[in-house]
Length: 139
Image (tube, helix red, strand yellow):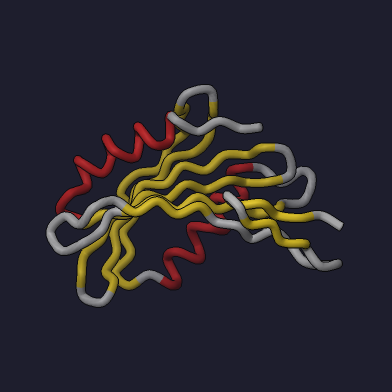
Protein backbone atom coordinates (compact mmCIF):
# COMPACT_ATOMS: atom_id res chain seq x y z
CA UNK A 1 0.00 0.00 0.00
CA UNK A 2 1.47 3.40 -0.96
CA UNK A 3 2.10 6.01 1.68
CA UNK A 4 2.64 9.76 1.90
CA UNK A 5 5.43 11.17 4.03
CA UNK A 6 5.63 14.78 5.23
CA UNK A 7 8.28 15.71 7.78
CA UNK A 8 7.71 13.27 10.67
CA UNK A 9 4.24 12.21 9.52
CA UNK A 10 3.52 9.14 7.39
CA UNK A 11 0.03 8.19 6.19
CA UNK A 12 -1.02 5.04 4.39
CA UNK A 13 -2.97 5.69 1.20
CA UNK A 14 -6.17 3.61 1.09
CA UNK A 15 -7.03 1.64 -2.04
CA UNK A 16 -8.47 3.90 -4.74
CA UNK A 17 -7.37 7.15 -3.07
CA UNK A 18 -5.14 9.73 -4.75
CA UNK A 19 -2.32 11.81 -3.34
CA UNK A 20 -3.67 15.39 -3.19
CA UNK A 21 -0.72 16.76 -1.25
CA UNK A 22 -0.11 20.49 -1.52
CA UNK A 23 2.93 22.41 -0.35
CA UNK A 24 2.06 25.83 1.09
CA UNK A 25 4.60 28.55 1.89
CA UNK A 26 3.37 31.70 3.67
CA UNK A 27 5.37 34.93 3.75
CA UNK A 28 5.22 37.58 6.49
CA UNK A 29 2.29 39.99 6.29
CA UNK A 30 2.61 42.86 3.86
CA UNK A 31 -0.08 45.53 3.63
CA UNK A 32 -2.45 43.37 5.65
CA UNK A 33 -1.96 40.36 3.35
CA UNK A 34 0.29 37.33 3.63
CA UNK A 35 1.76 36.48 0.21
CA UNK A 36 1.87 32.73 -0.36
CA UNK A 37 2.90 29.98 -2.71
CA UNK A 38 0.90 26.81 -3.20
CA UNK A 39 2.44 23.88 -5.07
CA UNK A 40 -0.09 21.31 -6.25
CA UNK A 41 -0.10 18.44 -8.71
CA UNK A 42 -2.67 16.72 -10.84
CA UNK A 43 -2.44 13.25 -12.31
CA UNK A 44 -3.13 13.41 -16.05
CA UNK A 45 -3.91 10.81 -18.65
CA UNK A 46 -1.08 9.70 -20.92
CA UNK A 47 -0.92 11.98 -23.94
CA UNK A 48 -2.25 15.03 -22.08
CA UNK A 49 -0.36 18.10 -23.19
CA UNK A 50 0.55 21.04 -21.00
CA UNK A 51 -1.35 23.27 -23.44
CA UNK A 52 -4.61 21.30 -23.06
CA UNK A 53 -4.25 21.12 -19.27
CA UNK A 54 -3.60 24.87 -19.04
CA UNK A 55 -6.57 25.66 -21.28
CA UNK A 56 -8.90 23.62 -19.07
CA UNK A 57 -7.45 25.25 -15.95
CA UNK A 58 -7.97 28.72 -17.48
CA UNK A 59 -11.64 27.96 -18.10
CA UNK A 60 -12.11 27.03 -14.44
CA UNK A 61 -10.32 30.21 -13.26
CA UNK A 62 -12.45 32.41 -15.52
CA UNK A 63 -15.63 30.76 -14.27
CA UNK A 64 -14.81 30.77 -10.54
CA UNK A 65 -12.76 33.88 -9.77
CA UNK A 66 -14.57 37.19 -9.41
CA UNK A 67 -13.46 39.90 -11.87
CA UNK A 68 -10.86 37.56 -13.40
CA UNK A 69 -8.46 39.22 -15.85
CA UNK A 70 -5.71 37.34 -17.71
CA UNK A 71 -2.60 39.55 -17.71
CA UNK A 72 -0.08 37.29 -19.44
CA UNK A 73 0.42 33.69 -20.54
CA UNK A 74 3.53 32.37 -22.25
CA UNK A 75 6.00 29.47 -22.33
CA UNK A 76 8.65 29.86 -19.63
CA UNK A 77 11.74 28.18 -18.25
CA UNK A 78 12.81 28.36 -14.61
CA UNK A 79 16.02 26.60 -13.67
CA UNK A 80 15.97 23.30 -15.56
CA UNK A 81 12.19 23.16 -15.94
CA UNK A 82 10.19 24.17 -19.03
CA UNK A 83 6.53 25.01 -18.65
CA UNK A 84 3.89 27.70 -18.94
CA UNK A 85 3.72 30.91 -16.92
CA UNK A 86 0.41 32.68 -16.38
CA UNK A 87 -0.37 35.94 -14.58
CA UNK A 88 -3.88 37.01 -13.69
CA UNK A 89 -5.78 39.26 -11.30
CA UNK A 90 -9.11 38.79 -9.54
CA UNK A 91 -11.03 39.96 -6.47
CA UNK A 92 -11.35 37.93 -3.30
CA UNK A 93 -13.58 39.25 -0.52
CA UNK A 94 -13.29 42.74 -2.01
CA UNK A 95 -9.48 42.66 -2.21
CA UNK A 96 -7.78 42.82 -5.62
CA UNK A 97 -5.25 39.98 -5.80
CA UNK A 98 -2.70 38.85 -8.38
CA UNK A 99 -1.40 35.38 -9.04
CA UNK A 100 1.69 34.31 -10.93
CA UNK A 101 1.55 30.63 -11.90
CA UNK A 102 4.04 28.21 -13.38
CA UNK A 103 2.90 24.77 -14.49
CA UNK A 104 4.88 21.95 -16.02
CA UNK A 105 4.63 18.26 -16.90
CA UNK A 106 6.66 15.68 -14.98
CA UNK A 107 5.84 12.10 -15.85
CA UNK A 108 2.07 11.65 -15.61
CA UNK A 109 1.59 14.72 -13.40
CA UNK A 110 1.19 18.42 -14.00
CA UNK A 111 2.69 20.48 -11.22
CA UNK A 112 1.28 23.97 -10.68
CA UNK A 113 3.04 26.58 -8.55
CA UNK A 114 0.78 29.52 -7.68
CA UNK A 115 2.18 32.64 -6.02
CA UNK A 116 -0.48 35.04 -4.69
CA UNK A 117 -0.03 38.67 -3.61
CA UNK A 118 -1.97 41.93 -3.63
CA UNK A 119 -2.68 43.11 -7.19
CA UNK A 120 -0.92 46.40 -6.41
CA UNK A 121 2.26 44.37 -5.79
CA UNK A 122 2.24 42.43 -9.09
CA UNK A 123 5.68 43.71 -10.17
CA UNK A 124 7.17 42.59 -6.85
CA UNK A 125 5.26 39.32 -7.04
CA UNK A 126 6.83 38.52 -10.42
CA UNK A 127 10.33 38.78 -8.98
CA UNK A 128 9.57 36.73 -5.86
CA UNK A 129 7.68 34.10 -7.84
CA UNK A 130 10.51 33.75 -10.37
CA UNK A 131 12.96 33.05 -7.54
CA UNK A 132 10.68 30.43 -6.02
CA UNK A 133 9.94 28.83 -9.40
CA UNK A 134 13.66 28.64 -10.23
CA UNK A 135 14.30 26.69 -7.01
CA UNK A 136 12.14 23.73 -8.15
CA UNK A 137 13.84 20.34 -8.43
CA UNK A 138 12.08 17.22 -9.67
CA UNK A 139 12.99 13.84 -8.25
